[in-house]
Length: 172
Image 1 (cartoon, one colour):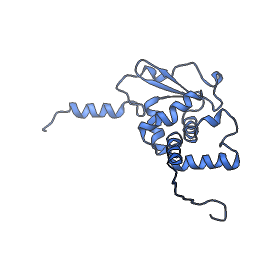
Image 2 (cartoon, helix red, strand yellow; image 1 turned 90 degrees about the vertical axis):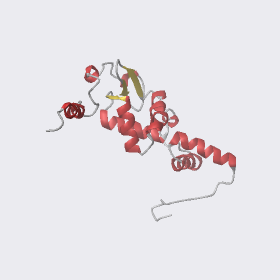
Image 3 (tube, one colour; image 1 turned 30 degrees about the vertical axis):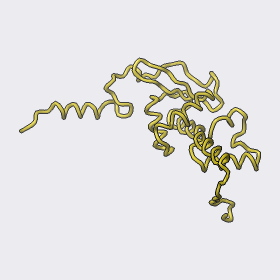
Image 4 (cartoon, helix red, strand yellow; image 1 turned 135 degrees about the vertical axis):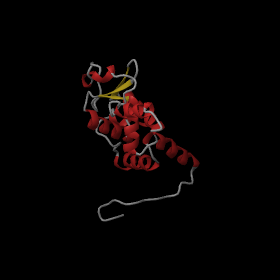
């Protein structure tokens, strides 16, 4: 340990039951390190890592994902679900396939986000960390009327350029 009380700790687990519990916890926390760190904090400090009982049911990774969503859209903001999952996976260094299980579903269960099924897209609506109806806006985003060919991040400009190049005559 360093002078500031931080450092690397490693140990061997010879108990198969404990090893299985660590693996299970790693799935919900996002990594073995986070699972062990939070378990030790709860066991030795009596602190689950949050101030309220409701938030303690939400994993550290899910709370970090919510913080990022609020940073990107604000409370009450809307974002396409696939775009949100891709951005979260990139920023949090988690496999895109695991984001829905590790972040979106726990946040939805904690009423910190909601999903809105549009005609062409599924939208993620970001609520406050406290959850509840007051943190959500009932309006659909203005961009729900976008055409299918528009990309979520560039307004379809890249697709239009690709179509222009594909339709250009070859062999000048």
